[in-house]
Image (cartoon, rainbow, N blue to C red; front, side, top):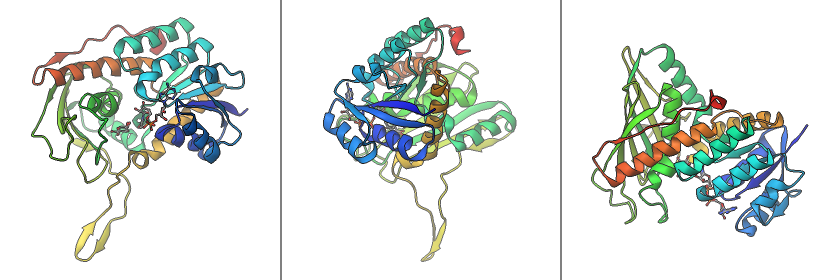
Length: 336
Ligand code: NAD
Ligand code: ISE
């Protein structure tokens, strides 16, 4: 059976995921497209999915009888309403991060899915599917004793004018927030944010760089540097320090070149390239589960916990230097 997919939001990642379904993965095809800007949907239709129908409204795409499952790739603030509509229609949906822009919104999704009685939602936390993070998790679980500290960095070469200080949390750090819960099998109890000297390359609306300090239930201390105008590349670093040793996330594969009396290798500049394989594997997982009428991988609960933790980090930005507590509700049995 070929799973028939509708894609809502055909900007950068919606286009890339459509290419993935159409040209890379087996078992699914894109039959419907929708974007707030219909020209964007028509452009993706022309380039990648000529047989797909273009819908003016995402709600109509979700309700269409020939759409089995939905990819939600529109701007973050629109996710909640589309995910709720997919759950109401009983259709599996893959929702790009963030699941919702507020913890209350994410909770409404958890409540709707629990009321439905089975998982339908996968959140786009693709790092859990990354081979490098898998290798790191294996070593953390078996080789370095109890993890004590994590030193991490999330660096982008530059960001546009629309990118403002809280987006460093909602848009950028949210990947670390999720992947460290998974890597350490832990949850957060507090957050603190401090701002180093501002880079002259950062525009007026964004404090850059930032350092986020997280503490977990097990007492692990995590420091993450977010530096979204670092200029030199897209660079994700993660080092876990344990009682018996220390483990680093592998660097992306690259040729080392000895030339002109220099030893060098290229550094990626685009997030789409850095995690290209992980996006493939996460969507393959979605297609397999959706074909069975369900969802696996990062859940609505993970999206909800990420939203609660993000809200605390944004408050910590606003009250810089202060330690903001993070309290989580009990996890519904559906997500055990
Ligand atoms: P984008 O701005 O390139 O695309 C967003 C698209 O959504 C635009 O075409 C816009 O017209 C459309 N849109 C806006 N409101 C809409 C609505 N109500 N209904 C339908 N379409 C609507 O942004 P992007 O970079 O593709 O990001 C989209 C989402 O994907 C964001 O939530 C972002 O955080 C997430 N994202 C995830 C990753 C990742 O690594 N997992 C990477 C990039 C983006
Ligand atoms: C972008 O939206 C992503 O999700 C990328 O994975 C992330 O690394 C980048 O910082 C975000 O802007």
